[in-house]
Length: 526
Image 1 (tube, rainbow, N blue to C red):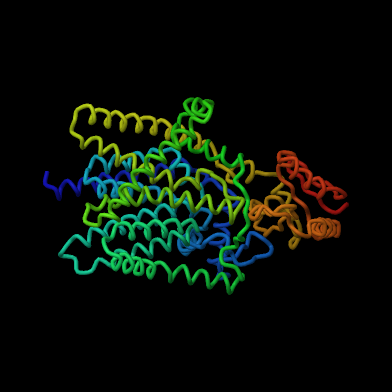
Image 2 (cartoon, rainbow, N blue to C red):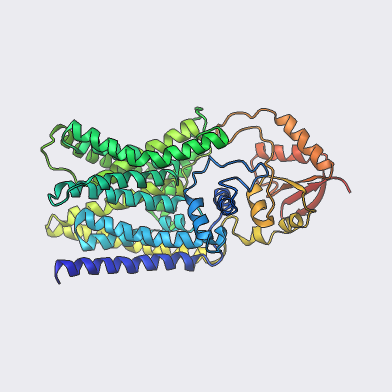
């Protein structure tokens, strides 16, 4: 087989794996993707764009311009919606295609990184059969699109350095401009895209040989990045007088949040339940594994980067593996700083950790290929055993995930919500009745009515006490007792004591008109 035929065969195989990935998502989600509060915000935002109203929070009665969520995912859903497909259904179509596309892109990254067809296919397979990555794509969230733009940016960045080495290429700057554009698109999908910006800027500084080239390439990259980002910032300032709805306030990372991160990393390491339980039961084992992994990668990337920076004539490290590793630490720094300073509601959940897991898979295949290249029998045997073992465990975990997901919708897509008697009660209320609820998103999704949020003692974003709580409670009760509004409290009794005490205070003195499965609706007295 000629090199050209071999390359074509690799792309055909990756294409088939991409189709398989798309099928997996569609097969596992017959009732639609998993839904959360953020999912409903993206879906409602897309509907608002389609209606010609702009990117507004139509799931809330305030209907303010959205700045907290960047517009990328909602815009894609709106574009798909031009065909007549409602964004709620469009999420399943988009994310199924993205799972296939991301599988293909990772295969391309594996090939460019190693020039090995086997490594390319291995990386695509490990991503395709990774239960954590799969669960990210079966939720109606922006992470799959963010991963897509990030992977394309990695590829164009690598192509920029490849073009510089090719004397036949007249202008390599088009690739760094494209990297800037795709980084901006990633940012407009998730604000964590700033980590990509920092990663590529640092890589340009470390990998170029002269300060002139470093500053020139960084300037061209920023020129590609800024227009879209500045346009979004101007829109936010004009429409809502804030850039991203974030406030600079210090709030420490809680122990609960750290435990959430440990559990999700354990899920990524061991997709088999019995193994994961063993991992978690051994004190600090998951933390030790994470710490050792990060230390090894940090030493590797620092050694490679500083050697190139201080010895410009030395060989340039492999671009994709280098930037992927650099990105792990840039992204971690971005998320931790957000938790500490900008958004107390951000948690180390699977979707937040997902970009790190993608880079870890890239580096896993990079080191497996490195071991295989040693040519010694024991090194090749070890690398083959590791690859086969990880793939087998991943496939088992993937099978269990698909089986579980097919049993029913997840989150707000569950029958518990769309068959809710409380939702039916709300749908039958007179037109114009205001609905105050602790679940304004699902109320909008299943009744088509915009909701009103409840008064709260603490702002979940800043972690600071809210002003005017007592006045808010009094105003809500007055509105309900006037007959113009109702109070809908879902899962009453299942929240923490602090939250439950607020619910009890809100409901005090109101008429309980509906009570099923812990869902309570209060109205004026008949």
